[in-house]
Amino acid sequence: MVKITGFSTRDVRFPTSLDKTGSDAMNAAGDYSAGYCIFHTDSDHEGHGMTFTIGRGNEIVCAAITLLAPLVVGKDLDDLTSNWGQTWRYLVSDSQLRWIGPEKGVTHLALGAVVNALWDLWAKTLGKPVWRIVADMTPEEFVRCIDFRYITDALTPEEAIALLKEVEPGKQERIRDAERSQAVPAYTTSAGWLGYSEDKMKALLGETLAQGYRHFKIKVGGNLEDDKRRLRIAREAIGYDRGNILMVDANQIWSVPEAITWMQELSEFQPWFIEEPTSPDDILGHAAIKKALAHTPHGPIGVATGEMCQNRVIFKQLLQAGALTVLQADACRVGGVNEVLAILLLARKFGVPIVPHSGGVGLPEYTQHLSTIDYVVVSGVKSVLEYVDHLHEHFVNPSSVREGYYVTPMEPGYSVQMKGESMDRFAFPGEEGKSWWRGEEAKVILEGPRI
Ligand SMILES: [Mg+2]
Image (cartoon, rainbow, N blue to C red):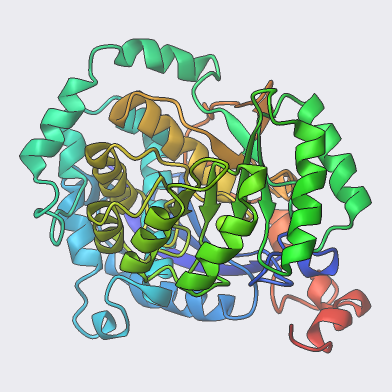
């Protein structure tokens, strides 16, 4: 029996804006950041959960964590996990806090850190990685993790159980695939950031091809001629007929008609999908773009979105509207593991593959579990998962890729526990003499123009 005795939060920020890592049409200069929730217990175990942001405002997420985390302090972990769906409902039901959500925005980002910290703690007490806890559940136990409110018009608990039972044959074999790190093929955006020079892009494409990657994502939407030039470079490197897949990502820069005409211009490069062509809230807009791009002179272009989709309700509607080729839920934005499980089930019901959002610090550490769960338990089909190769050195159990596949995490927990020295070094605003943010180098960001 483990009791939660307290919590702390940490605001950790990495100065990635200095070299434009993570830059795209909308997010020109992000400092990859994590708002942490750490649960302390009456045992040796701690639960670590984080939410990803890209800098300014991370302190607001941390403030929201301090409002949510007390809801579970003083409680026994077993009581919280024995009926997860009910616990999740309890955590989103503070009647005053709910007003500044509900189930969206900063409060939901903070909930993601809190819920994921509970899963990390639970996994550590059970001595299993998070994906394995879910893989060991019966379909009924899986479904009990989910709050079905607002989605039963698309999926009932009974249907969900039936869907999970359908893929149970073969599950043991898929668990063995996971144990051999053959469950989650990786794709890379390393070469694709908008702020990178042509030379840097060419070098990174060559490198990642040699490492065994077959899927490559390039940021677009800044300038049409530049996009054509960069996609030409990408296709020259990866070819059209060597089984390599190109994807493009506009990070919400366009209105619907602009998305359609711009992508028609880029159709000669035959991307699999355009990611985030427009506002993440525009369900019918995504459906219109998908319909318009279903036929181009060079074949169909699919539509993907999800990293900024607020919750399961938006995903339900995107799926009901036939707006998605690929679904890209984020591990933090939708309030943690439980809501992701609901979204995986919805995607399965509508036959849409999931490719969780992974472009951020700590996200690959999380999503490797989620994609493994999808393959082993929910869809039974392998899908790709983004791998961004930086900042992993700050984690106690970093994610990694070998021969084009994620190395399945086997350590107990949810893999986002950061090293203590990294937390201190990149704490914001941090301590004098310890934190990078207190030094001279940080002034370029702190005192420079806001981009
Ligand atoms: Mg994206």
